Amino acid sequence: MGELYVAGKKRTSDTEIQATTDKGEIEPGLKPIAVASAPTPAPADSSKPTADEPAVDIAMQVEKSCSRGLAAWLASSNLSLAISSYQTGRVYLVGSDKLGRVSFFERLFERAMGIVGNAQRIYLGSLYQLWRFENVLRPNEVIHAQFDKCYVPRNAQTIGDLDIHELGIRKDGKVVFINTKYSCVAELSLTHSFKAIWKPDFISKLAPEDRCHLNGLAMVDGAPKYVTAVCKSDAVDGWRDRRHDGGVVIDIDTNEIVCEGLSMPHSPRWANGKLWLLNAGTGHLGWVDFATKSFVPLAFLPGFVRGLSIFGNHAAVGLSKPRNQRFEGLQLDAELTKRDVEPWCGVQIISLTNGDVQHWIRFEGDISEIFDLCFLPNVRNPMMVGLRTPEIRELITFETELQKGEVAP
Image 1 (tube, rainbow, N blue to C red):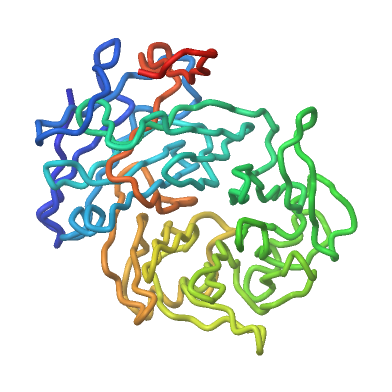
Image 2 (cartoon, one colour):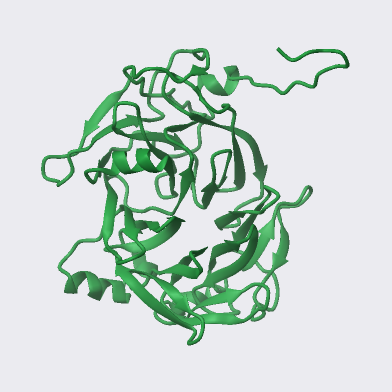
């Protein structure tokens, strides 16, 4: 029912990878959900998409490799990763299985972009919808004899092509997102495509013009707090000419620019008392010095960096290969040449203490970019129900409200 991928001989990795994709043949109907038991051989592939699946290439050839010890680190940390790639229309859930392998679970969503989640809920931005997935398993339950979380698509709100970028989950569980096309922070509307809740002071009006390329969102205490923009342009597509040093970080509450002089900044994140972010045009992970409004680099990563998640003292960073005129010609090119290294597509997990690479995942073949990622704490081996699989029809769960005098079993 599945395939085992072992890291290539030319790499330093010797980690076995269990890949579960949208190509598989899981039989109709689910096995009963049961309490986790002793290790058993893991089933792999889930069901094939049909012609109604989003218009993405389902025949892509992607080779995955990872660092030695990644599976053990994920397992010991009780941690998984969710990764999106809009170029390929893929969502990857990366965990560790009971046989000590890195587990990749793959689903197709056209133009999969911003992704954020936790053990209970995942939000995903796609071409014209914002998806909400809910985990339906109780603690200590597994499905298909291996997955400890099963994320089911419960809502797909149609918002139109807003070029939706990063997302955040508020303390009340609701989602907020970066509406890049309209240069604002937005939330869902019951009636309309979106409700704008904030825009930069330098943006004169809401217009579908991607003026400053607003892209990144940092949440603090369950509320949106900081955003990144490639520049302060107030003209259509104006950010294209300001990629080298026009980038800014803005405090939403005060409208103050707290960091400037950046090159295509992305993915601000508040953690451990610091505001971390990616200076994508130079390839650096670093933090904001609020006193000087400057960026302090911690580590160089060989690729266009976009997508950042922090767990404890570790940061997962997405890397992409530079592409087309909007991403070429940056300082990143010179940095790659200086270090005599080719750009990556994948994920590197960095120590925030010293900037060292602790673990990594590398994608090769018909994939060249990662858009976003997030750690999923308290998740060991997750799966996601696809739109054209038996599960979407047959996995039915429900809540009960006891009648007066009725006793729960």
